Length: 432
Ligand SMILES: Cc1ncc(C[n+]2csc(CCOP(=O)(O)OP(=O)(O)O)c2C)c(N)n1
Ligand SMILES: [Mg+2]
Image (cartoon, rainbow, N blue to C red):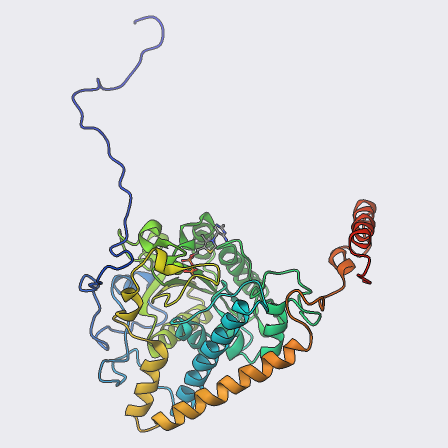
């Protein structure tokens, strides 16, 4: 035996240099857009497995796309949820209301009434189908682009505006960023700016629901960009291991601020395909087709209720506008991307379907849009009575030290007194 440590390993031969691959989006500002690389199947072709099937039966669907509404505006195939015209009209109106609300709040930010806003333009079908497909008290753990769920569940618009304006009627007392709602009575968990944290929380909530023998399920949403966070994978592991009654949604709107979906893995495979790696059911759906989204959500909810565990759903869609009011997408992507998006606009698609059914008309649509704009305007005016950004009508300053401890610990008491003293010295006119 040789003495001393032996160093094992091959001799380094004449090897090529390693190279790092850095993804690059296909189109930049000014580029013409060509979407022929996207595989978009005809609607109605995919089979709808039984909700209690083996998870592996769904895996082919994760590489495909569930679609119901065709170019001829008809609903076809086994995934057609067969909703009555009244429900379809309600879903249309809620999508249009969400868009009207987004447009007005965006303008409000430009007018200085709030510091920040995030629209969900082009993605309304996902939230609104979710609210319709689930029970009213199923628990939703949203990201910041699911305001449609709150609106569909009938949360008062005035309260939303109060929160956005951080005024004296803000139910969250100015402690959350504008748009980061929290509405316990509406089964809507507090929105967090820390991306993807809601995913493991939803799974934990679903596990608790099962432990308690409850019948409510949970659902959560992350952007495709956020699906690169560790929390996504922790959530998937727990959901799979404990067969949690949860519907996990990835909203693939192609962009994460200025990073395209390739940075989260989209060039390798679909986001839905991750379901197979965890051994759970997965579906991939045309996110701008509200009937397909509804059908997928309903399928996954029924599966969870039947004790068959979690489903991962990828909603393939497009973020039609900027990430937030702080963003300018014309700096990093082609304007044609949104205009040429091959899956169209979710509101227009449902509208045309209803017209094709003889259940809706242009005149009705225009009248509806006018009504909704008025409804949003009235809510905004009402909320403005409680104050807008910078007009001093917010919750009293000292309240920021309240509501966490039953009795304020001495060191926070000291900080509170110091803060109030400094404020009074600096701005003697402030009374609160
Ligand atoms: C943990 C964490 N990392 C980064 C950010 C900053 N950030 C806020 S939104 C965002 C993009 C998220 O994109 P995506 O998940 O695709 O959601 P989308 O905005 O497209 O709906 C980033 C990087 C954050 N808020 N939290
Ligand atoms: Mg995104």
